[in-house]
Image (cartoon, rainbow, N blue to C red; front, side, top):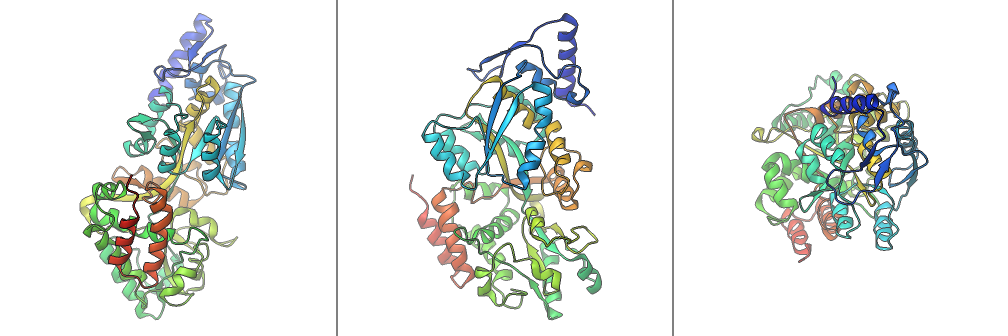
Length: 462
C-alpha cells in the first residue's frame, strides 16, 4: 500500500515531468534558512526510486557529499553504508561515513570546536538536548517531520524534540523489555511462557523447586558497571506505576526515591536479591556485580539457569551457531506486565538523526533516513540480523532474524506504549553516574531506601 507521502510525491513528480520543469526548491518549507537546490531529480523515471519522490524537492545533488558521524562500528557499519546506496542512486549525492568508539565525548568536543559533522546519529535524548543547546543543530525539514508523523508514534517524535522544536527523526531501535530463555528447556520441563507478572513469579518458584537457579544476571560493564540493573528498575517502574509516573521520575518532577520507585525496586529485589533465584551458573547474589553483562545469559545454554532479562541486542552475544528462534536453542519473550491498567509498556533505546547544516544534500539525506523505504533497505542490507526500527512502514518480511521480527511486532503493536531508557535521559551525573553506582551497591547489599536516597541527593541542582 502506498503511503500518503508516496501518493503526494508521485503526483508532483508526474506534473513536473509533463511540464518539463527544472526543480528549484528549498530543503524545507518552514525551517527558515535552507539553501536552494536546483536541477532535475536524478531518481526521475527509476523504478528503484519509487517511494522516494520527496527527494525531488532537493533537486540534482550530483557531486555533493554528506558527512555522517556515528557510534556504529564494524561489523554493523557495513550494513549501514550499504543502505545508503539507494540514496546515491536517487539523488547523485554520496555519504562519507565515520564511526567512533568515543562518539559521545568527541561529538561534544567537535561541536564546541565548530567542527560538527553534517549529521550525527545520537543515541540518547539527553545528548541531543546538550548539542541542541549549543545552537548548532538545525531544525528538521518539513519532509522529515511529515515522515515521522506518518511512520512513528508521538512518543518517538517527542524524543527528537527539544523545547517544542523538532530536530531529530528516529533511526534504529531496540526493545529492552525481553526475557531470554531456552524453548527446549521449557518444553522438557513443561514450563509455559508467562503472560503476567504473577505468572512470572510462579514460574520462578517452579524452576527453583527443580534445583535450577531460575535467573542469571550480570551488571559488570567496565566504567558503565550497573547499567543493566537500571534497566530492570526502569522496566518494572514503567509496568508498576505507568508511563506518566515514569516520565515524572525521569524528568525529576517527582523525587528519585519516591514511594512508587521504591516499590518497583523492591519488586526487582524479589528476584535479583533472593539467593534462591540467582545467580545460575555464576554464584551467589554478589556475583551479579562481577559478571560481565555479555556473559550473563550464557548459562541458559547449559541448563544452569532458565531466565535472563536483557534487551534484543543480546542476540549478538550468543555463540556462533546458536539457533535463536522460537523453537531453537534460545529465544525471548516480552517481560510481563505487573499492572494491566497501563496496556503494554515497552522500554527501549535507539538513535536519532540530528543535522548541523541545512544544505540541500543534508536535508535530503535526513529525509531519506526517515522514510519507510530506507527502513526496508536497511533491513535487507542486514542479512545477519541484529537491527530493527520502530518505523511502522518496515515490512517484517525483510527482517532475517526472528528476534528482530518479534521486536518489530512489539513496536508496531497498537497497544504498546514506548518509553526510552530513563538513565539515558537523566543528567549524566545521575544517569551515567550515581544511578549505575548505587544500583551496583544495591545488588551487593545496600538497602533500597539508601540507594534511592543517595541517587536523589546526587541530582544536580540546576
